[in-house]
Amino acid sequence: MINDGANPLAEVALALAMAFFSLMILMLFAMVNAPTIDDVKAEPATVKMDADSSSQANNEDERQLVIYTNAGFFDEELNRLNPGEIDPAIPVILAVSDQMAISRITGFQRKYPDLKLEIAELTPQWQARIAGTGRQADQ
Image 1: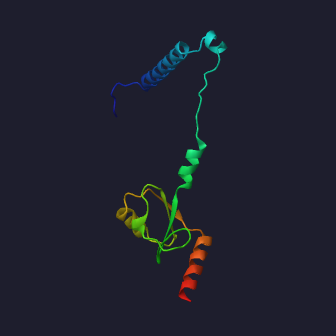
Image 2: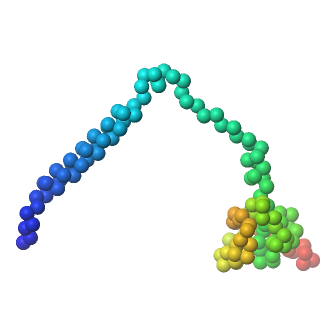
Image 3: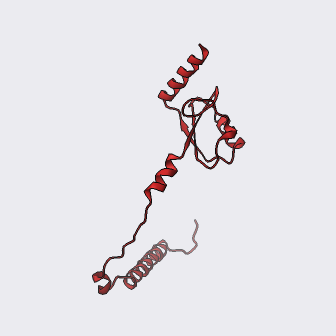
């Protein structure tokens, strides 16, 4: 039998005292920072925002699509593309198949670290378009 002389009710009382003390501090803080009547009658503070929507729209429109398949790299018109000639100033959407190994994607990222990449999955429509182009090239 362990008897260390501790009373469990003393522990509960200490925890309750700490909780009430915390509530008292929060209440004092709220009372000190309460708005005065003059603040309530005054005009509410407003923030004027100068949003230039044209510059924001251009940043999103200026992304270039690079399609990475087993056959190589293509642009959005499915023309062959040399990844070394990609402009690093413009963000790149790297579209890949869901079957592509992650190691190939990370290898591309390591080979071209200055590119701002956003990786996206090729949709079935794009995959069908790529497959159609491949068949036409074979004929």
